[in-house]
Image 1 (cartoon, rainbow over the protein chains, first blue to last red):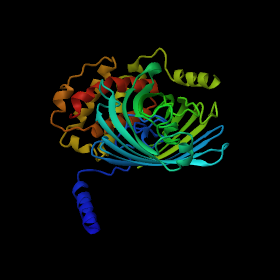
Image 2: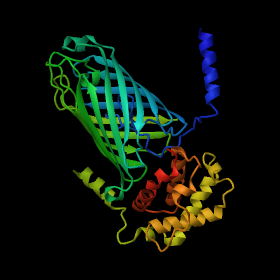
Image 3: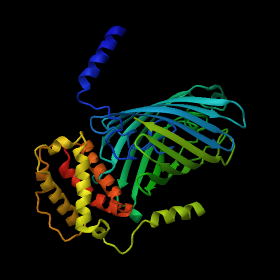
Image 4: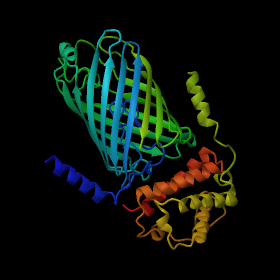
Length: 282
Length: 135
């Protein structure tokens, strides 16, 4: 059975390889692969974008690996992620999140498996925005604390639709990019505190947005906003915000630094601090 | 607040005031050498060079120079076919189009064209995507 699986995989690779190029960088323009979000999908830092990760354009494959660290007053989030994209059409992603409860003690963990498909449109060319739909299956791996504070489930799937558009010659003759995402979710603190709660059991639609201006093609500055549900009665949950600087020195490496405001988390108010993300693309 | 004002200054400072886009690109001579650099780079790009097989590259250089000069308001009249006619059946993909755009950007960078002028030219050429690339 295994042998047959390997053989058909090899046959598939042989059949497909003349048609596709595993381009070492890919043909999409610099920075149009975006950064890696804390949930693994391509996008900004906290908002998944309609853009697909890596520089894989027509007929090309691309991949990224990424690490992100968020350090706020009483918590620290560490993320290791990876993604695989094909044909500027499909993106698969994975992220492992560890949330260190520095002040309270202990840690929370979650895995996120994501898929995104570009439905139509094009970030750079044409009048319409690029439109993609995606799903993120999340599995909380340290559910005893979330359960104790009223979370209902240790796993769930977020669904989202994203629209992204670039203006090559925007205000100040700079290139601007905007992304709007509508997400259907019942995650508490993106799932680190489980899914659903005593206040609200069901999923709801939340809005997320990012705007960035490219000072030149290597440097961008921008802001992000992410609305979140408020399902647990033990502590209120706020929207997340950040102001970021992104650097794309080449198609193989990018760095994003941000100042972030995560509001109240688990009863501890005004959680703000720094975000740093590194991505390598192939 | 100080960070914001620095960002604002960075956004504004490279905008060259008082020069037309045509002048910022170095007029006809500058445009001609940018196009030359772009085509030279295309010649070494195995992704797209096949689109130029059997093509009179001197004529292509003349026409693209004329066209760029024309769209940025220079004293030229583009004498070639429409983009739709000249790219009919070539099978130009999104990746191919991006490859050419990338060579143009790098050519402009090599000629020290300000970012603001680069963006203005790219924004004038980008709408041609619909007529050049296959659906």
